[in-house]
Image (cartoon, rainbow, N blue to C red; front, side, top):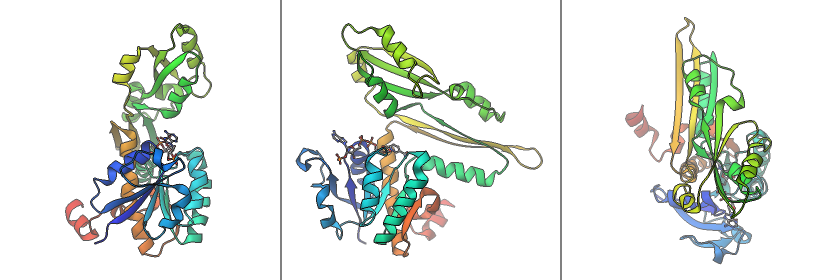
Length: 324
Ligand code: NDP
């Protein structure tokens, strides 16, 4: 059988992760990386092609994996490309997902393509578990905790502070809150009670560390609502200990069935590399896009609309035998 032919749009952390992940999916092959930069400057083992030439590849690609950022890349590239290709993306701006869905849906329908949006772990696998737990345990409460994990946005915010040479931020769920949730106390938790933020900073020569720490801790939205700890470390330690992008978290639902029996469902992820794991999820969903398209479906879909069996390269018969 013919392999699923994948095109990558954008070559950042997720793009690189997708290129690597495809090696583990024997039914897939990478065709090319499409980039807005000079293709010669993009260091991939796949052919690198200017995004301006992407339409030349319409017949050579089954699914495009959109690896751009959610803030500005996907809202622009997604609806344009969905007119010409079936797509998978990891759009993660939760509040704007309905708008993004609508725009992808109309583009995909114009091109008679399939676009599966907001694929990843949150949104993505976490959303699936929130939906599943809520559906099967109607009386209860669902909690999501993130971390321990590196937050790209918060790390960027630290690096913009005067006197900061290098910096990373880890979001850490608080044990006390996790315990209260797990015991079924159904606590009302404030932002500050759920997570804390731990920062590792390399300061510029002669910079005022007290001032840097104050500036970080008082940053509205980013750090002010949280308990924030700032550690100053030297550059060597930064290079050895803080080059990975770990992440993960928990979806927990506690509730009661009719007699008052306490029930708890929990899903946990512990990831050494967030982009590598997220990319692997994107690749698996390419199978679903191909199957949907074969069935004649068109338009946008989210992870909640995709049956589990469509993610697998095994047949439904085989899955029933092995995994039910
Ligand atoms: P990056 O910033 O690494 O890459 C985004 C884009 O920037 C790339 O596609 C690339 O486009 C461009 N780019 C990358 N490196 C360079 C460079 N050196 N110089 C110039 N341009 C560059 O973002 P990530 O790959 O880390 O993340 C992408 C998105 O993935 C995030 O915005 C987030 O929305 C999503 N995500 C979702 C998750 C989920 O669970 N749903 C989890 C993790 C991430 P080009 O090649 O065209 O220049």
